[in-house]
Amino acid sequence: MTWLFPPAVVPSLPILGQDARFPVRRILCVGQNYAAHAREMGHERAEPFFFSKPADALVTDGADPVYPPATADLHHEVELVCALGEGGRIIGWAVGCDLTRRDLQAAAKAKGRPWDAAKGFDQSAPCGALTLGDLPDPAAAIGLSVNDEVRQSGRLDDMVWTPPEIVEKAGTLWTLRPGDLIFTGTPEGVGPIRSGDRIEARIDGLSPLDFTVRP
Image (cartoon, rainbow, N blue to C red):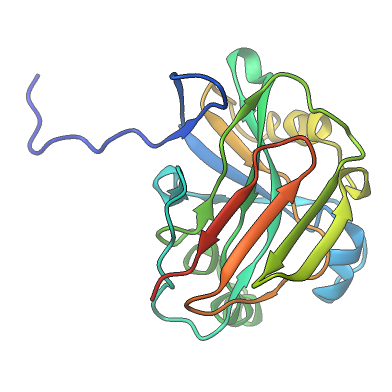
């Protein structure tokens, strides 16, 4: 078989302590999985729901994402990321940041339209190195700072749904495959970032995620 043009490179995550990489098939994301964040977005506690990002939205290996076009209100959302292996089993964890064009999201919500342009744009999913194995501590601290100012601070056990419950629910909607990533939601404190801002995202026990928003 020949290709009309060369196929795209498979997006992947580095694995802490290994030369091997984790090939990424797709990215699923969970909305409103921390009750306090749901409230700050104007919603009461409810079942989380899913949206998606393309796999090539990943920003990895210490690269810095570019401030996206068509927005004046880019927001940060620190998240625990689950990496799935055979049988939809969680085999690893990482720190991720769901970048969101909040103004486009608000406009889409007001008109009952999809969020794709607000959530699934290029370079919208910075992610740190993957740590294989069990989650070090289900009550680990999760947080994010912008230019050394703490914006988000919480604990993983503040989640409405736990990672295994999220995976089980996702499995009722999709056939999960090795290479799937799931961003599991964000704690309260989301807010705007600008070109030149330095973001530091942390979850205790996992490789940190640091990046600067490029113009």
